[in-house]
Length: 573
Image (cartoon, rainbow, N blue to C red; front, side, top):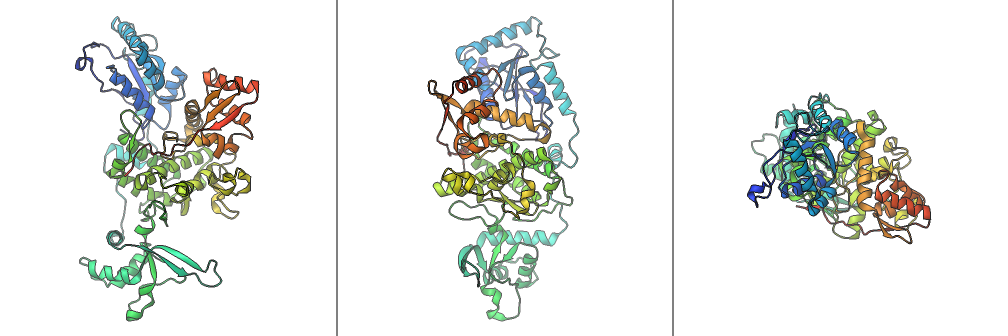
């Protein structure tokens, strides 16, 4: 499906009644389902409707400008998707449809709307052509389809002409050396080596990770250069110049042909960029940024928001492709082996060129949320979720980094440094002992990344960040133009499915550790204040909001947290 704008109304494949028991009859399609890309609840609703033998039209409301979703929201009053319309009238979301199918109400509503449509009365809200899509939504679809893409969006060009986009590269020598380095990394096994750090360094000994010796490199080049005329040491120096190899240790060494077998570079340690930037699972350590295996070689520097927009579109397209039909399972193993994932990994290198100073507050929030979520999918495909015990979970979000504008950012840096205004994370010492104020944020006093902190922070970002685990919010994408509505929808969806009353008399509610433990200070100073804030994320008049407000009025409310489910929401490689 198109990655930027794909709001087309298309007849969905469904289980025809004639294929089953002949119960349903051919007739007008009266059901329309408003969806967004990679939404598991949308998949669940569509699967339930199809399994019931009911045909429907699907409206993709993934357009970043939000025009289709805004039109649907005006009609339905809902901020979340899916939104299911029957005969032009909103029936509800995925839970409502499943419940309606179970008790027979949904098929009855469909039959009634079908009868009206057959008699020629499509209803005031119905489509202008008598179809199931309300006029306002169909008009918004046409508007979105006719919108002009943002200048410089490579993903739009990719939609119009698949496989047209190629990295612009005039440096044929770099390309040749890059392929040579990739082959070398595949056959030379790196190792960890303890080295003397020099006086007065402390500690005096350091472990150099994922390194090889200069002799290893030159010997490999001697044996494996195909058709190369340059000496191996000259080729190794060319790789050093282009950042494909890096010298480590106290003193840097080049590859000097003079000196013979006693040349210092032979025993010196070097690190290949492929080894440094390869994501590895616990207890191994990834040294470099996982998007910096190669430098970005595009001809023009694009605005940060467009780079993030393209990465977001690629991730959504892959996620949608590998999300199960019922929306409950993501096949990360298949995703990791796909050509789209390989293209995504190459595209992340463009983050090396962005300038974050050009972003305003909403653009900054949307950029960092989208990049965080993209990095999590990247790492989950490469190494899977943190499943090797306490320390794996404790360090997972700080072990992998993207190079963004020449500076390395981990998921912890993005979440706690940028989006939470430089507050300590859940893995900090203070947070672990229940006193987060004892620990500093991830950015020190002189860290240049402090300039990109979002202040004051918006706690709703917690419901926008994903981690690939079952207890995480589902993946969505965010744009500056519609950020408030998108964060409101994410918060409503999360709170509606997460907070539950467990003891009416004592006013006890169960919630995620995100709200009640790890980031409790972001939502309020005590349980009552936290419940009051999260109740505000729910629609006025909703049953859950009224239950929380009634408990707050009685006083003595208490929050307990549910155990966090770190199980992968799919299958890893």
